[in-house]
Image 1 (cartoon, helix red, strand yellow):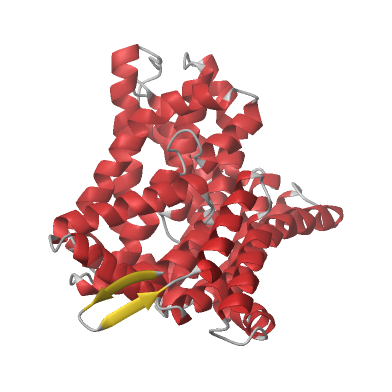
Image 2 (cartoon, rainbow, N blue to C red):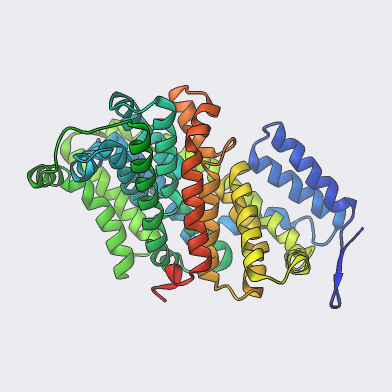
Length: 435
């Protein structure tokens, strides 16, 4: 089958491409683990197409994950787990509540703010949704929020897990595209703040319309000081991570290692954890890491297979043949990324789609840093896009609230986050301010 022929470029794809792709979709529908889907698809495409030796799979599996930058992933996950077990996450909530909790819709806003704090430490949206959800959803209900809306608020706030540095998503996309994670972290500061402020504003507006919450306590500098002083050790962790990275003292991986050690020392000193807790903490973090790393490993041979089949070049020609209007192309890219974020986790989306879409972005004159920020933020919108957003399933599973009820309440956040994506896409300086 001829897929595309234009300006001397010809791409021919036959059953050896479409049959494995169709089989992959069937496996996803039947809830086969993503890493298995990726592995079977890459092996079958290589076997039938013969574009590369089949032995590439084994080589790519180990060489692809043999990267110093990836060590940061389990370390950030472990840091988030230790943060919860030591009770430092509750200190961060107290600080957030002291800062904004005295205003109307204050605890809802504090919930979003603590999601941002958590994002500065764990770098994971699912971890943020679970950790913050356990602390806040019941209290949000007590403040007057309907439970489905409380779940949607936490799900939206937890999207900052991949948007606010240090983010596992930026580590992975930097590794795949050969871009410094530190550079991406710096570029993501303004976009991350835009997202968290937008979610806060949306909650305030929804609260005004629906009358969910009306906090009775006023703002107090003394209350803020007391909360900050009490939670000074909790604030020390994100300060070490962000300060070390942006000052150039640490690489992201080294910062993650220092953060783990710092949280463990604080927990042991305060007596909130003991040596006996170590096996549980390591096992819990290993389970999460055991989901992420196999996906990265099996995504890499598939990405190399698609590159050998010239899918990225074909994608560029296909999109530009539809239209030469840069605005329309960017909107189509955003639509594809949001849809992909709805149905699949960030890691496989980045490993597979980033090498395919970057050439198109460069074709229309988009800087690679700008593209990375737009891509990760668009995928973040997919986390709360009904009915398949990952964060919606996390909070639904956490509370037992029906997924469709949570999804319905998440709709305002989808629109406001999508608006931020459009601003980031069409105003490059929001991402390139530090270059």
